[in-house]
Amino acid sequence: MKIGIIGSGGREHSICESLSKSEKVKKIFCFPGNAGTSDVAENIEIDLENFEDIKNFILEKKIELIIVGPEKPLVEGLVDYLEKFKINVFGPNKIASQLEGSKIFTKKLCQKFNIPTAEFGIFQNKDDANKYLESSNYPTVIKADNLASGKGVYICNNQNEAKLAVVEIFGGKFGKAKNILIEEFLQGEEMSFFTIHDGNSFKNFGTAQDHKRVLEGDKGKNTGGMGAYSPSRLINEELEYKIINKIIKPTLKALSEIGADYKGFLYTGLMIINNEPYLIEYNVRMGDPECQTILPKIKTDLLDIFLACCEQKLSKINIEWVNKKSICIVVCSKGYPDSFQKNVEIKNINKISTNKDEFLFHAGTSHKNGKTYAIGGRVLNFVSLSEDFATAKKISMSNLEKLNWSGGFYRRDIGYKVID
Ligand code: AMP
Ligand code: GLY
Figure 1 (cartoon, rainbow, N blue to C red):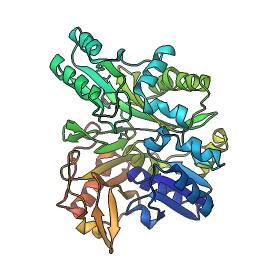
Figure 2: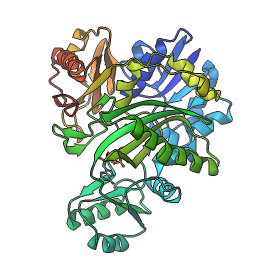
Figure 3: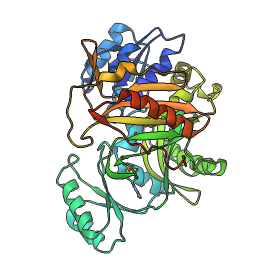
Figure 4: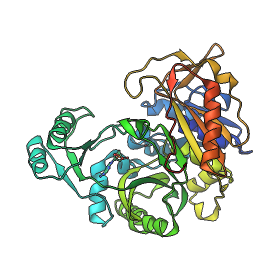
């Protein structure tokens, strides 16, 4: 089969690698991919906003299945568009993608269906928001409604910080803002819970914990994710039952009432307080770097799973996993998440050879004249699997030492909560 993958991050490289193990996969195209995907797929430079060009390429090359990695094309309706041309796509449609595309859509859905989440208010203008903030408890959480690559969330310690956030959001920092969301601050531990859906049924797809802050000790600015480990230390049978019955099933019911059956990965971002789950956010895709920690553990053919989802036969598939711990450490360009230099050579990358249960997934990289260059903020992902987290981390760290790249940095404390 010919497969197409939309995206260019570590998540998409890990999807390419997993799919390339399937005997049924004859060729993979990656739109636009990175230096890592070019080893297993053909990278296609194409504007991801130009749905018509994407569709024409897919039809011309007779690509039989498309997997959409990132949120933006999902929220913009790429799945709906391609399906009009009878193209087989794995990913949620535009209505369902509002779960990530609009935080206010999700909060209203939680309210209507009694889904546990932080108390909240929605405000249409600065004055109303500020009035509410005068009698709020602190810290409080202020969010832009729309997609903001994880940057539209402010945790404010006092009224001054909160009012500044209101000014920035209504000032258009994350695009035109009609509304603003103010939320109660939930004190607990975060966990990411993944499921895969075929529109009819769904299956669990692992748990993980990422480290969003740029500095060690979970300090500093928010990033796309500096590292992750799987499984989460918080998961247990009772908690899983609550997540599914109090959060995921009511959400699917709510979507089906507005005519959207969910197909694709669903990433449920949770705050766990005394073994009770509260919904923080939904993402309508796999997490990055969580995906890179979860996919290497899968034993079942990933293509069979995607195809079963597209044919609404997921219930007939048994998804098997290796029972190991997985850790991913992300190497970033110096300066990230603020400005950083582009086109910096990664000199030692050829010194990294990976054994069984070790993986090097590329993100912001590109090949030129046989050399590898960093072109993005998050550049490489070092993933290892082992019987325990400490060993997995040791292996990733020893590979990182071989890289010894002066243009990059990484957090040395990924997984500190699960490693003594
Ligand atoms: P989001 O983009 O909604 O996931 O928010 C980004 C991060 O902000 C989350 O991963 C949490 O660490 C934090 N956060 C968001 N909402 C809350 C909340 N209500 N209480 C505490 N922390 C929150
Ligand atoms: N790692 C966070 C995300 O993928 O949104």
